[in-house]
Image: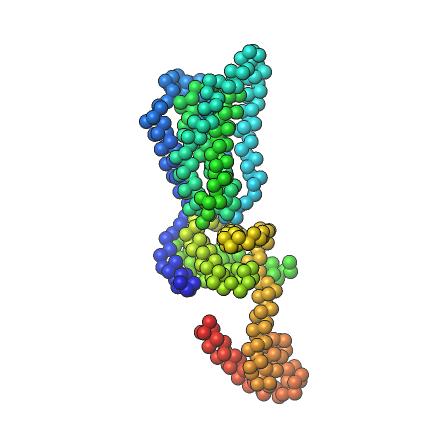
Length: 213
Length: 190
């Protein structure tokens, strides 16, 4: 097609677009993915039996503060890299903020623990499954945010994929926390972080194929 | 960067951005004008980098225009518009080069280059003018060169080349008319 004809065609129907409305589109996609992840969890394994009482305890909120904090940062990073002119990888340092806070808590807990309980504090009873479970739960979110990211305008595909993957991982971890009854900071900062990192790495790995536009 | 260049850039930014803002409000005419202005800029930007691969250049121009249209909601009206377009153009260019597995890397810091008149563009414009001028009779060529290109007044031009002032005026007028005709037919063919 001749370029002038293309321009004419593109200009016939110009729907008004609110500036930054892509934020809402992205939020809807994320919300849909997270809702599906939650629904799948409820329909298959269900939540932990003592969820109601657990919601009034510190360990539960420690986990949620951590994962929700990472959702906020992962979401901000995803939106940052969904705009074409942004490319600085330095923004990823923000991810270290919640990790550092929880790591300090973990060190504090380990310092105050009896030496024989340290191993259990770290490994809990589900250490080796936890990252994979989080990865599994985050898959619907992963698909939703990658699908939406592709419709926006990322130009740094690997970074965008990593940001979206971390967002998906943090969302999956938030949902998974409804099931998981581990309660120590060393456990969460190690195995939850690993579970969040997995989809992040996957996102970076497949970004050049999946996010290309 | 010279001051005049800098001001030219600011004007480009202000003008394109106001078109974009109007387009985002749903103004089809502004959108059309914006895409046309961008097409010209993009064509020379890609042309310079891909050489004579004209089909590729036009493909890229169209891809960027479509992206500007369909992804326009990722533009934040409080940020520079030219940087936004340039990032898209740069992305499409690297993507094209990658497709052709020519792994050339292009630094991203030349942000404003898309919007500054560059030397090649100017030189090729000068070549075109010289070429078209050479098709005119000698007296007309001289009259146009002195008054329109070198910027002399009619009196100064008359002194320089020995034609009378009224002859200079007549020759400029006839020559320009002829140039316009030549230009019109050649751009119709193109």
